[in-house]
Length: 121
Image 1 (tube, rainbow, N blue to C red):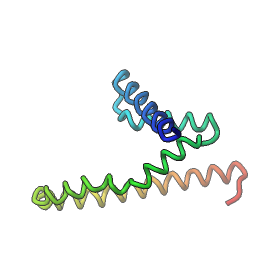
Image 2: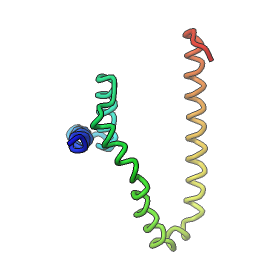
Image 3: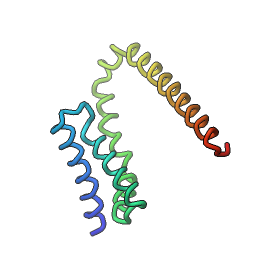
């Protein structure tokens, strides 16, 4: 029964997020909004309910299975990937560099803010 309750919570949040995204014509994917709704609900509640924890742990246990379709797709479409390998490689390197730079900037900003507020390092 806890798994059903936990899955219902997850699917309910995803449904709310999808409804918001479509209803308000937002450019953000519904599941992302659903995760934000879940985050807000958990922050308000103050803890993770045991049913949701059990469901999350069960889903994470089999997370690697979600990579199988991507691996099969890479094998099936190997020629297409090889045709654009240079573009894919440059895109991966640039996007990784931008992500690292933005993360470093945000961490630096948060650290300065914490130090100004009187926190310790």
